[in-house]
Length: 129
Image (tube, rainbow, N blue to C red; front, side):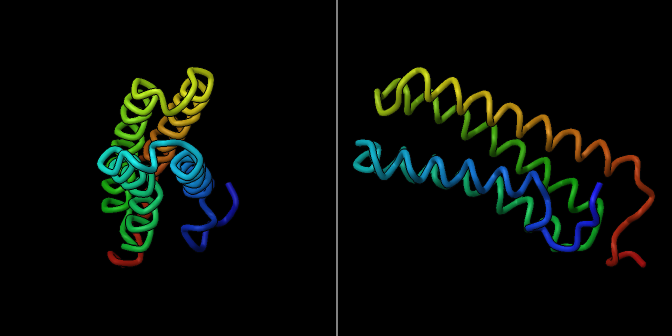
């Protein structure tokens, strides 16, 4: 694993950002833009995936980081559920739904793997030195 100095270096954060941008694009090009509540919910949850990775990283503590990664994983699941609602409302195709569900499942697995990796480390973070 390459040295990570900032949260922007984390591949899971980069992927969460890419997927959040994809959600923003769906909002821009579909009638989801006029479904204000669902639009705000899915933009919020997809943004929360990347934001919680960043916030946890910046807290400089392994235990807190893992907690925020867990929240991030939960937000990925929430976004996946909302994608079904977006599909059921006929804003996206089944093909787009399936593609994004797979991508969010993959991201969730990667976040879980990273949590497992951190669970095996003795490093507690700069906060606890």
